[in-house]
Image (cartoon, rainbow, N blue to C red; front, side):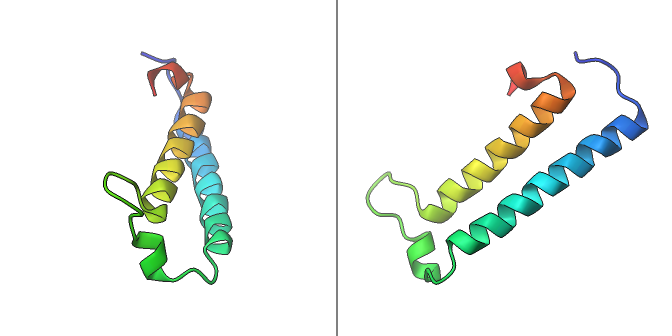
Length: 77
């Protein structure tokens, strides 16, 4: 189990996560500008992931890594 964190420490982590996810959301929005919804959600082949699925995976992993780095739990991700 990681070190104990104060309420302000938890709030600081939450703020960092929200900033990172907000930045990622804006960046992904720019990257997908002009790409149709059909293209974003279409799987290119059997067992392949759609662009939207890859983006969701990257966003989730990025959030877990940020949380892990700030809480000393990176090795548990």
